[in-house]
Length: 462
Image 1 (cartoon, helix red, strand yellow):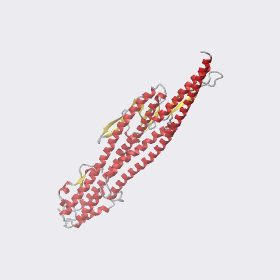
Image 2 (cartoon, helix red, strand yellow):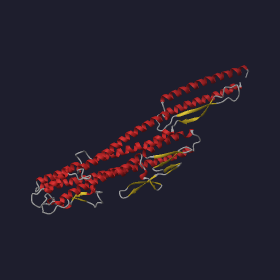
Image 3 (cartoon, one colour):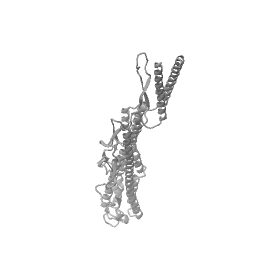
Image 4 (cartoon, helix red, strand yellow):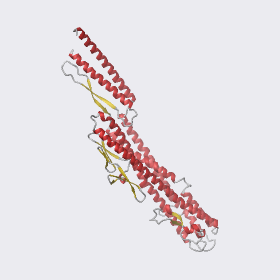
């Protein structure tokens, strides 16, 4: 009879184990759409018999664990920054590309109209209206360069603002990850920290979308995180936020952690993408635009200064710059008509001599549109603008293609991870049925033993 009571205890443990299995399957189903959730599995162990003549003491619950593949999870945080970096670059560069205008409707059109005005002046070198037309087209060309320089500068400021906003998001995630380290480290058991670990994995994933990270697992649970060339931002329960200072002369954001500059070390994530556009791509476009504006002013001024105006004097410069230049830097933003010429159309040089009706200088300026004056005498001024447009389009397309390629890599890794950690409703339905049937069978066994004990007790008169 004592053995029958022992069997009742064994069956009672079995009922608890099957109920626990139902609970675990229900938890998985409840979190089928929860980001970062890793499927739970119940670990059971058969209890050995205490004495000869017994089959065993039934089953007991060892614990609940989350099914994770650390290699795949690490791979996600490795691949994610590259994908989001290209996405950020494609996003920012598409704005730059749109700001360049349509072919034949931007600086290329202003160049054509400018040279057309000199062609018209060559046909009527003494016409006051043609001279006014040259002034209008010249100012239009200078304004086109200034406006384009302003749009590029605005796009650079936009990239800087996006970078600053991303830093705020990074700092918020860093603080939350450090707080979860405290929760995980202070948990009384692995089971009690599973939800915190799920949340932390999702936060680390979000962080890897914003900046390239190095993640190290802690022995007691949780993670340490470094960015850039190994600058720590999370160490145990301590977080080190990214500080932002305004750097002269333009006031763009300079980033540091604990006083150590990290701006140049961040190359991945959305933050790395916006910094790349702000510090590399757009400055390159601005430099090329400045070089083109400087070349236009230099070539036009050289021909104009060699000619003669209506007063019989040499022409002097046609274009000028509103502020002193260091090389060609800033030429596009500073390009203007020389004030004296802008104020008096008679000072436009049309001839190669002071003779009335001479149109040599105007003809030479009109022919400048076909002259190979750029890239060592291999490209025209219009070609120079086309090369700038092509570079922007190429960079934008390259970033978009790389974004799509990287996104497919991340998708495949996520699919592999989901095969291990993801919740399958079909599989959980099978688990529910398995534990339900096991519970029902153990309940019948319990009833059988209970009736047997009741019969034995009645037979003994107790």
